[in-house]
Amino acid sequence: MTTAGTLYGIGVGPGDPDLITVKAVKVLSRVGHIFASCSTKNTYSLALNIVRSHLNGAGLEHLPFPMTRNPEVLAAAWEENARRVLEVLRRGEDAAFVTLGDPLTYSTFGYLLKTLKRLDPAVRVVTIPGITSYHAAAALAQIPLSEGEESINVVSGALGSARLREVIDRTDNLVLLKTYRHFDDIYRALEELDLLDCAVCVSRCGLEGETVVDDVRSLKGKALPYLSLIIIKKKGKGC
Ligand SMILES: C[S@@+](CC[C@H](N)C(=O)[O-])C[C@H]1O[C@@H](n2cnc3c(N)ncnc32)[C@H](O)[C@@H]1O
Image 1 (cartoon, helix red, strand yellow):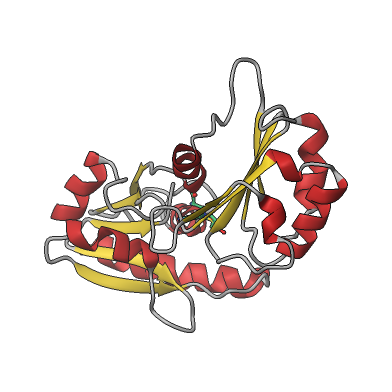
Image 2 (tube, rainbow, N blue to C red):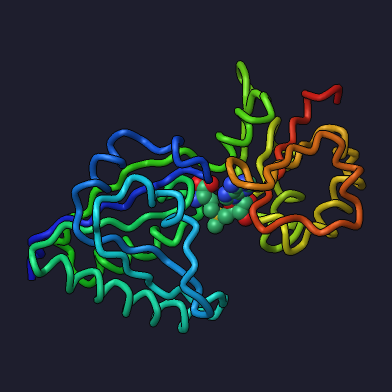
C-alpha cells in the first residue's frame, strides 16, 4: 500500500537548539505530527526538548524504545512503532521523527527507517542530516578531528574498550561514543595504550553542565555523565 504523507527523519544536533539546520526548522514548523523515541520507563525526549522552540503547534508523540539488547524484543518494538508511523502517514499527513545529533549515526532512526521500508517499500522518507555530537564536541574543544592524510574512526564504547582496542593501531584519530557505562574499562585501556595524554573527554556538549576535560587523568575512578564522548588524537596533544 502506498503512503500519502512523507516522514522526515530529522537530526536535531547534540543539544544547542541553534545547532539545527534551516531545512530542519522549516520542516518542523510545518508538519502536524512529531515523533520522538523515548525509553519504556518514561516519556522524556532530549531531542524533543531541543526542538521545542522551533515548533508551531504540532502534535507530539513518543515511541517507546526498550533499553535491551534482546533482538526479538527490539524488533517487536520497532515493528509496532513503524506501524504507528505508517498509520499517521496513511492519513495523508507529513510527520517528523526527531533524533539527537545525526539521524543515521548510532540513532534509533536507523531501525525505524529499515522497519518502515520493510513494511511498506513505497514509504516516502526524507532524511535531514544533523550535526553529530562529536563534530560539535570537536568545535567546542577546538580540536581538528583529522588533517591531511590522517584517518579517523568512530566507534562505540557500549562494550567497553573492545572496539577502541580493535581499531586503535589502524587509525590516527578516534572518536569513542557511548562511554559512560564502561568508563572504568575504557580508562584502563587508555592507560595501557599510553593514550591518556592524547584524549579529551566532552560531556553534555551544548547542554547545561557541559564540560571539556583535557586532563583525562583527572577522571580516573569517576562516573561520566550519560552524554559523554572521548576524542583521541594519536599524533596530537603532544603524543
Ligand atoms: C546513541 S548515540 C547518538 C549519537 C548521535 N546520533 C550523534 O550523531 O552524535 C549517544 C552517544 O552520543 C554521544 N553524545 C550525544 N550527544 C552528546 C552531547 N551533547 N555531548 C556529548 N556526547 C554526546 C554520547 O557518546 C552518547 O553516549
